[in-house]
Structure formats: C-alpha cells, structure tokens
Image: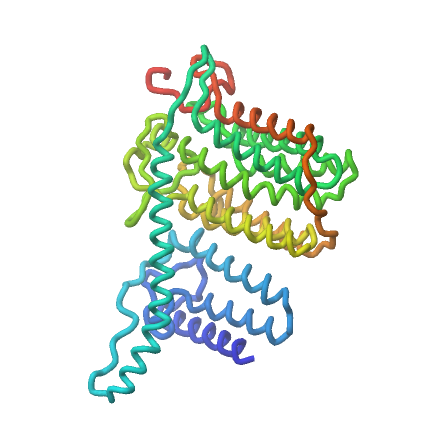
Amino acid sequence: MALLLAGAALWASAVAVFMARTGKLPLNADAPQHAVVTGPYQLLDDPIYVGFVLAVLGAAVCAGSAPGVWIVTPVTAAATAALVMGYESRSRPQRPRRARLSWPDPSRPRLRVAATGVVATVPLAVLAAFGCAASWLHGLAVRSATRIANSWTAVRLGPLRIINYAIYAALAAAGGTLVFELAAPGPSAAMAALIVAATVLGGGVWGKLLESTGRLARPFGYFGAFLGGVFGVFAASRIWGVPVLMLGACVALAATWTQAVGRLRCLVQGCCHGRLVPCGNGICYRRAESRAVALAGLRDQPLYPTPVFSIYANLFAAVLLVRLYLAQQDASALLAAYLAIAGLSRFAEEGFRGEATVRRWRGLSMYQWLALGQLAAAAVVGLMASPPLPALAPLAPMEWLVVLLAALGAGFAMGADFPDLDAPLARLTPASAEDR
C-alpha cells in the first residue's frame, strides 16, 4: 500500500508541477516549449511515468497478483520507455543537464559526513560499474557492427552474383528452422517447409509493394515476413491439425534467432539504418553498395545503430522465451511474450530509424502502427489457454534436409542476384549512376 500511495503521490505532484509551469495538460501530443526542471523533475526526467509504474506495481502487490508483478508491471514500464524513445523524444524539449548530487556540508559532524558518504557512494558505485560495463559492451558492439556494415563483398559466377550477406540470411533461416523443428509437435519437417516458404514470400511481396523504389528491385520487409509466417501457421494448423497457438509459440522461439542473426544482413546491406546521432557512438557506412549510402546519401555520417538495438531486443526475447519454455508455461505465454517484446522494441526502434521513404500517419510511422498491432495481439493471445510445448525431440534425416533447403533458399533469395539483368526482382543492391 505504501508503494501504491507513493507512486500515486509522485504521479499527482508531477502532473501538478507540469501544469503549473507550462500551462498545459501533460499530453505528449502537445509538447511544451520549455522543459520542466522543478519539483520532482529535479531528480527524474519522467516522474509521471515513474509514479504510474510504481503505482501499478504497488497495486499488483496489494492484490497479491503474480501476473500483475511479473507481466503487467514490466510491460507497463517497457511501454512507457518505448513511448518516450519512439515518439516523445522527437518533440520534447531538451532538459539542461546538471549535477543531481552534491557532497555533504563540511561543517556537519565528521561521523555523519562519513556515514552519508558511504550510504551514497556504495549504491552509486555499483550502478556506475554496471553502467560502465554496459557502455563498454555497447561501444564494442557498435564498433563491430561498423566493421560488418562495411564488409560488403561479392563473388560472380557468370551472370549470378553472390553477396557475402547471403551467409547471414542462410544462418538465420537454418537456425530458425532448426529451433522450430526441435520444438514443434507433429510433422515438423513439412510444417517448417510451408512456414519458411510463406515467410520468405511474404517478406518479398511486402517489400516489393511497400518498400520498392525505382533503384531497388528486390527488398524484403519484416512485417511482410511476419504476416506471411502468420498465414503459414494457420495453413499448417489447418492441414495437419496442430493447434495454432502451439505452432505460433514454436515460430516465436525460432523468430528470435532468425531476427537476431538476420540483422547482420541488414548491417551489410545498409537497410533499417538509423538517423543521424547528435553525439555519441554511431555506425558510419562507407560502401557505395550500402543502401544507407546509395539511397540515403549518408556516407561517413554517424547513424544510430538501430540493427544493434534490434539484436539486443531479440536476444532478450530469446532468453525469456527459453526460460518460459523450460518452466513449461503455456504456448500462449511464449507467443504473447514474443509479440509484446517485438511490438514494444520495434516501436522504440522506429524513433531512431532514418529511412526517408517510410510512410507516416498521425505522427507515427507505418511500422509503429503495426508494432502497436503486435502489442494488441499480445494482450489477446495472453488471455487464451493452451497446453505447454512438448519436450525437444531429435531430428530425423528429412528434418535436417529441410534445414539445409531453408538455408539455401533464404541465402539465394536474400543474398544472390543478377545485377546485369533489367528483369524485375533481378537486383538486390541499388543501381549505380552508370546503370541509371
């Protein structure tokens, strides 16, 4: 109850201070001209959200609700963070950065000064250590991503060109297919072949209809692949009689690996790139074959490492889904967790993306609206009852053959082209100035 009341009090005081200082309601659709820096805003950037999340946690504890503590509260916190990063950060005024803590007054008794220093230093030192480690790891990830982004090479076999990121597409498809077949009940080889084909076809059709330009003939889109996978799941369920939620959970387990590895292809190809970084680490694209250079003209410009952000989210989702699987949670829980993380992370990621061709409506990109659809689907799926997935089973020779075929098919579709042909879908990279 104390946590609930404290969160509500923080929320109410932050709202009151905001309205008094800006003369506006705290609505992100009507951002103030100047940042609020008084009251609870002296210590927190977003005291309204922090207070609300604390109140939600307090209410869950008061009600004795385990789902409220372990599901509703984390999703609420992640949703507020995604809202700030994916939407509000573009319009909210910048807060002046100043020291939040100061040393104790030397005139105070030495024992009290020492005690205060220890109490303040120990937790700050722990937080600083975690922060430094996370910052170092992120910097290492960005440097590695920059090297990968500028590693474009290709091998010509007559009219066929095999680009080096074909290996990432092949590994992503092979790993995802392998995970699906290990977890899926029923004839997993046939179901995997159908779902993989539907996923690749859906990504290609989506890219051609919504993301294609006159300079790019064969793009692929995540949401097209997602919708293609949904179609494949329903078709497989209809044909072989396996429950939809169980197949969806197996695809969710596989998708975390597929997306995490597939983002390495995005780095080399230069798609899904970020906008300019005002300060700090960013990825600099230099290869003329990269979409970030050929289509956006962002050579040697530091860009937000949005593919790296996506890899972080998918690795987190992978760990969480494996934990749920080992705990024998319902298939619906696994699928809902994936949809929630995918929707929230993509909504936040879009706040840092820099493709100028993405359509926007009501202040949100087309992909942010689709990400909200994923979040809504997570809420619906999470309310459904379903049995847990069966234990892992060894693969039969036919299932290994499907893994190999999925790797070859995805590698060819997403990493091989015919650059000298003018036929539709012949080219993967943007046409050069001489070609045009």
